[in-house]
Length: 545
Image (tube, rainbow, N blue to C red; front, side, top):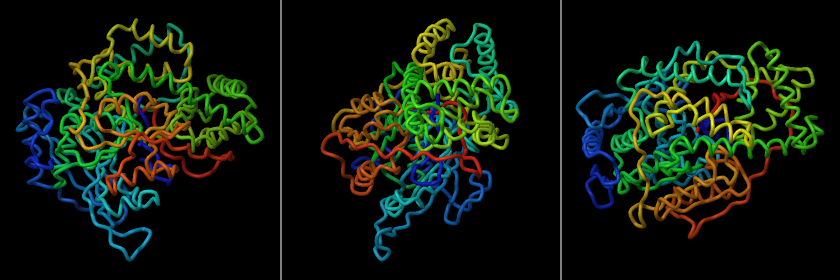
């Protein structure tokens, strides 16, 4: 399951070389599999440094209604790094120059520190709008010192886009979401997974195998060179932490500063089958947190004054929606997806609870506005799903016997029914994937091989369970972990927690890290509130990392 493109709780944005060697040398190359790919990365980076990026006005396709100051361009990378003179693809890039203005003192000029590149996760999420985060108060000091750079990774948006099925067929609604599916339903979903895998091969052809996390890391090094940076300053969120860690292992001397926010477990044995099982188990705990919060506000929502009663209210709604979809489009699957997003971000809790309450008390409007699929986003959603599937299926071996999936998910669903099977269906095309699978890189760096990396994690994060941050910290020598205790928001940099933001700013602006691992008290949970009218937020399809 993927994690949603990061939403900054601070505002309305959706988000999640060398000190001594030659600028485009291959520091840390021994960690990267494939000498040919390594040489190809060197060649592509050298070309990109020479070519640079010709930034100009953003096209409507790259950034509709782009504000003044945002500029877009492209960087060229090889489709296959083993053949750098072969087929080339272009990645779209966006940039907002450093303001160099101190938000606390408008008369003080802030020294520019270079480019800060951001990836929001996925796989499949675009970072093209990331530079706009500089308008959010929590990011303004960083925006003063850095050019904020976002990009669409390979396969995403106009960056050599992937597709696996007709977008008109992608957002099917209403749909079911059985926590304990029947054998007939399982057979139906297996057939769908096989068809989806075939569709990826048919619509994307021979290039499908080159959409991998390792190539995402190589692309990042080419982007670094194109920006004229000898060393990379990078913030990766969610899935972005995984290929960020690959980059750190492959090119340690190319790293200047790196923040890994909501770290994925990089253990090769867990990429990606076991990571997804762990994620489903963690979502059950976060769903329990949400139900406890609703129960504490029973005077507002009237869904039950205990978590068990709230569960019964949710089940009642799902049963009604199975019999008659709200607005003709919201069935149990759409309900589950809307509540899944609340597992990512607790600032979504009031709107979900209010919509469920209104539905059970006779008003389906808020739930329909919140959960009904938006046909206008179908093409984007289909593209994101195709990239997610291709990258995770290509990255690692997956069980190819349906009996293994059935056994593991049946066992897990007994204790974690909320998300287990929907997560399984999301990933099941990987059982029938037509392309060769890679062996994941064993991410490890020793003390002194890499500049200190800052890892941020919320203790109750469901999309990137906390043990993954601990594992990332163990594997990256000299890294430091900052934990938001007893909190579960997915993506905590630049959010509502001042303590977290203090460490984040100190690291990016001054290179300071805590002497040892640091802990921050949790941010305050949102107050209860009724449903709000107005446009819906862009919501993810079920499952994103």
